[in-house]
Amino acid sequence: MQTPSKLSSVILYSVISAAFIGPGTITTAISAGATHQLQLLWAVTLGTIGCLVLQEVSARIVIASGLNIGQATQKCFGNKNGKRLMILVGGTVMAGCAAYQAGNILGAVAGLNLLTGFDSRILTVLIATVAFFVLWSNKRQVISWLMTVLVGLMGVAFFVLAFKQSFSLTDIISNAATPNFPVGGEMLVLGLIGTTIVPYNIFLGSGISKGKTVSLMRTGLSISVLIGGCITAAILVAGNSVGEFSSFTDLAESLGDKLGPIGAIALGVGLFAAGLSSSITAPFASSLIATTIFGWEDQRKLRWVWGFVLVTGFSFGISGIKPIPVILTVQALNGLILPLLVALLVVLINNKSLIPSLYRHGLFINTLLLLILGSVLLIGLNQVDKAFISFEIFSGSHFNWIVVISAIVLIMMSGLIYRHSRKV
Image (cartoon, rainbow, N blue to C red; front, side, top):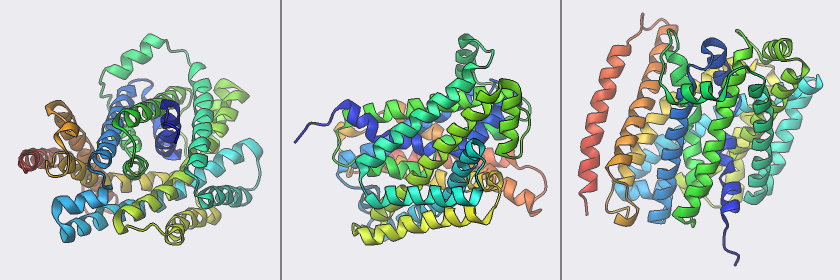
């Protein structure tokens, strides 16, 4: 048997960056650049670090225990409670995959439409058909190579747009490393973090890590996630060329006015690559989650799972619904799912009966995990608050209460970590 190489590991984990750079990332990052120039680049850095840490933790659990996340949860909490918890978390994440798929297909169609001008319904059928045949092949190597190519296309497209801007490398590095809170930027900060740390991506990363070594896992994950973070940063930098927009057509016209034809073409290529790659990874992740929760290995059952996600996205696309509102709705759903999943990972990685001492993290990583949990909790609760306000259930923001609740949860989680780390 051929020994896995670092290159093959990078190609394998390229699905991670391909999954989190979707139309939602493009929408959020360009909005951040258009509104606040480079001031929110640090949020991309924070989101990238958070993504890398959580992906490493979820993969480490699988490698160290030899169990998938569902089996590890049942061992930690007992079969009955563990199964219920996995159905709650994993089932909600699977529903999120279906919701994300709508934005993914619509984004890919919007990109192709900008490049070709063809009818959107024809392009929707084309994108869904390509995704179907790639998923039906069930060949992870094919999916990984395709994701590598699509990530490369995204990188070229958005770096071209970024290099057209007038900022110096010093400006970019400084803003990427220095937290800044411009007036009105709070929601975009949370959005940039939330669009990078995607719930189904955590299951995706852990699902492809079984049987890997920690060293190769870290190499593949680090390079893939860092490349994804750099592409997100490039999208934000490119957003400095535009103003407000309500559709990708408006965005293309704005980029074309400022940068010439290359602006609209690069957006079309990048949007198509981001949408198509995510259109494949979201259903793929849903099948991995089904395996994690229900232990399904039968390909017929798994095809029903990813088929449902794919059909959901196709139905939205063929209906002619505009992509921007769908994408923003999906971002809100993401905020509800993520804190519970992060809390679960924190407990699992610190359980002595589950994770051998050789694989456990120290104080620094645990502190970082708690900070990430606090961040995603703020995101999730704030999005719930916004939803209640928009439906006129509440009036006015309750951000102070959200901070208090988040602090209480972090204190409780600290105690839980201590208790589980002492179990033999």
